[in-house]
Length: 163
Image (tube, rainbow, N blue to C red; front, side, top):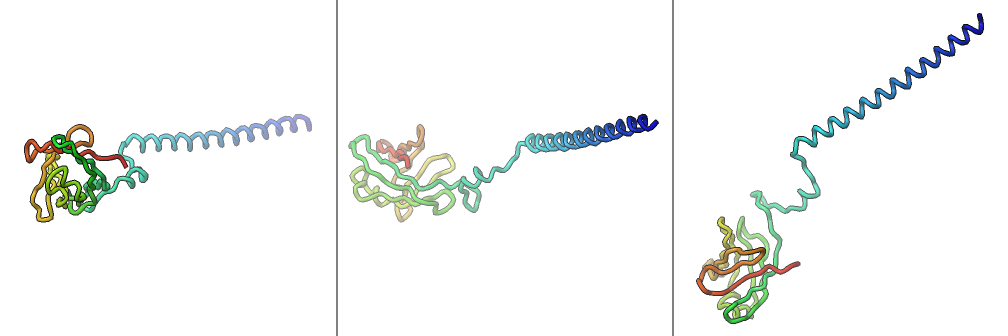
């Protein structure tokens, strides 16, 4: 009888061990399934915030994107002359500072007097002197190239230079 009790109690211990192991396995599997389900639901919403990408796009107070300062090669296709000018930082929502050295007057008269770059809603750009009078009006062409539309026949093109 003692041997029978030992056999039954050994079997009982093994069953308890199996139940504990199986319960733990089911618990871990349930947590994993819940985690994957939650992760997939967050992924399916589509609207996710990526602080690295979002933080790298500079935005001013009214929400428009701020373009960094840039250098432009200004060329006159009629006189075959060129110079380098710089578009600076934002002055107002669509206005930027602009400066051209004195030698740019050889490319187009009064080019060195330009102080502002104003981007219009239609995409055109007006370069104006310190008094706010337009000197050139440009429209964006292919890539980062701007060509004059006013005065007509000026033959002036601005091309953004790589950093």
